[in-house]
Amino acid sequence: MTSVELSGYELLAWRRAQLATGGRAVDLDWLLDLAGGLRWTDLQALHLDPAARRVRLACELSELASLWQRHRLQHEPLQHLVGRCPWRDLELTVTAAALIPRQETESLVDLALERWRAAQPGASPKPLLRWADLGTGSGALAVALARAFPQASGHAVDCSEAALALARLNLERHAGSARCTLHSGDWWQPLRPWWGLLQLVLSNPPYIPSAVVDQLDPVVREHEPRLALDGGRDGLAATRLIIAGAPEALAPGGWLLIEHHHDQSEAVLDLCAAAGLDHLKAETDLQGVRRFVCARRPC
Image 1: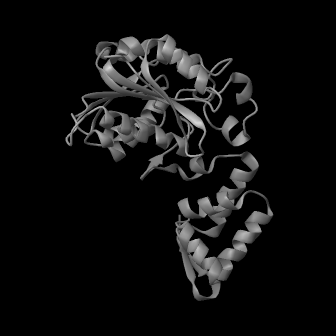
Image 2 (image 1 turned 90 degrees about the horizontal axis):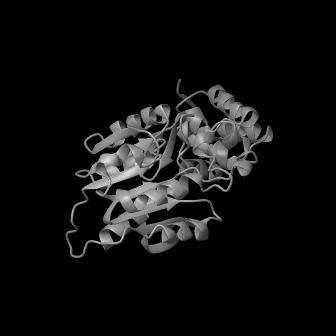
Image 3 (image 1 turned 135 degrees about the horizontal axis):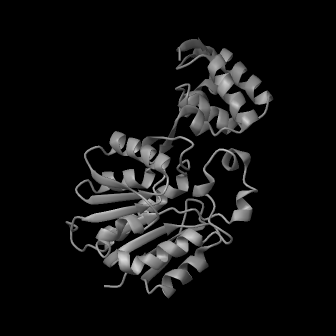
């Protein structure tokens, strides 16, 4: 890509012309930020005083217009078009091999850190020895855990070789010195040698009911892997397997934190209770929707 400099008036006129063809302003501004290098705060300043400012973009307007057209007409996710996605304090590499990391999933990491710290009394918590991310996809959760616990032994599992390759890239880029082993397979099975030793396990499994997947927005339905979306008839197929294996796979006192669909909280809590897990609690996402369940293997 070739950088270009233009006046504030020229950029705002281009922006109006693009929005006149369709699409949401928030998405176009996101594209200007990630592909063009124009931060949202700078764009807002430009609206206030376009005459006094000039703008340097990281690429030609024609390149941005082409990306915008692909997003509008072919429903390609903006994150795929630029090849990366902001998540927590990072920019993760993203491809069609795995789900694009969602902002609400950031809360799953925060809940995990809170649970571990609360379980360790005193000013110096005991170091975490072993964690796992089941269904790692892009590796977002694994990267966050590896950075939070660089001395721990981490395990990231996925049944997709393409997703594991993407996770490996993100782990090497953002958590290179941390210890994390990638495993190909289904949920707990590749971790059998460590059953009974896993102290902190996170999972964001496929949880959308099959019939609902077909009704999703085309930008999701046509470009993100169905394997990572489709949770079976009621959306809980993978969740059942994960919770059923937790009493054996978790260490005594070990935590399982799992993300679920917006209307599955009670069902997931019931599955955890039936499996004999304790300290059950539903937690909300950034919008106040019950999106996560935390559970512990009894000591």
